[in-house]
Image 1 (cartoon, one colour):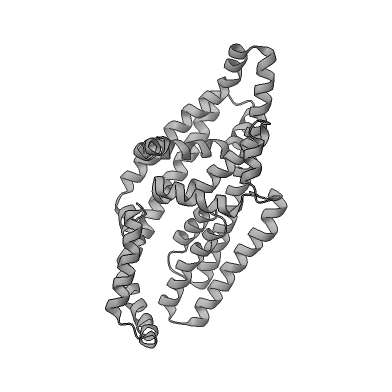
Image 2 (cartoon, helix red, strand yellow):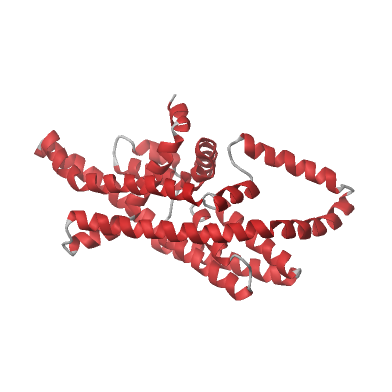
Length: 328
C-alpha cells in the first residue's frame, strides 16, 4: 500500500525527498550564518536564493549541452555502427539483428519507467521549463523545512515537557549531525570528482566536458556502479571524436585514476568507513527506488538509504535494523 502511494504521488514525493536531502546538505552554511548572528528569515532567504541560482545555472548549461549532444547523436551513431560492424562480422551477427537486440533491451527500460538515454536527453533538452517547475517545488519545500527547523525545538519542549524533550532532542541532534556530516562530505567529494573529470576532459579536448562532469557528480552518489557508468560516455565520445584507441584509452585511464584516488584515498580519510552499507542493500535500494521514481529515484536511492541507516544507528530501538543493513 505504501509503495502504491509513493509511486502514484511521485510528483510530490520526489521533490520532497530531494528537498529533504538538500536541507541536510545545507545545514553547514545555515549553521555558519547562525554563528554570524544572521536573522532566521535572512539566512533562509540567502541559502534558498543561492540554491535557486545554482539550479537555474545548471539547468541552462545542461540544456545547452544536451541539445547540442542530441544534434550530434546521428553522427556519433553512424561512427558507432562503423565500429560495431567489424565486431559483428566476426560474431556472424548482422546489423539488423543487433539493432533488434538493442531495441528489446531498451524496451525493458521503458516498461520499468527508466527512459533510454536518447529519449531522456531529448526530453530534458527541450523541457527546461519543466526542469524549472520541479526545481521550484524543491525550493518551496526547502523554505518550509528550513523555517520549521528553527521552531521545532521550542514546539517539542512545549509538547513533551522539559524532561522528555531532552531525550528526544538529544537523539534528533545525533541523527541530524550524522546525516548532515555524511551528505555534506559526500557532496564535497562528488563536486571534487566532477571538477577533476571536467578539467581532464577539457585538457583532452573531449566534447561536452561540463555535461560529463555533472553526470559524474550525480552518479558518484551511486557506489561502484555510478563511477563505471559515468566513465563510459566520455570515453565513447572521445573514441568517436578522434577515432584513436590510444586517445580513448588515455582518457579512460585518467578518469579511472580520479575515481580511484577520490574513492580510495580521500573518501576513507574524510568519511571513515563511509556508508558501510551491505552491497545487497545498495542493489535493492537502487532497484526499488528506480522502479518507484525512475532515474531520479536511482540517484537519491543510496543517499536516502544511508540517511535512514545513520538515523537508525543513533536510536537504541532501531539499532538492530542498522546492523542488518551494514556490510559488517
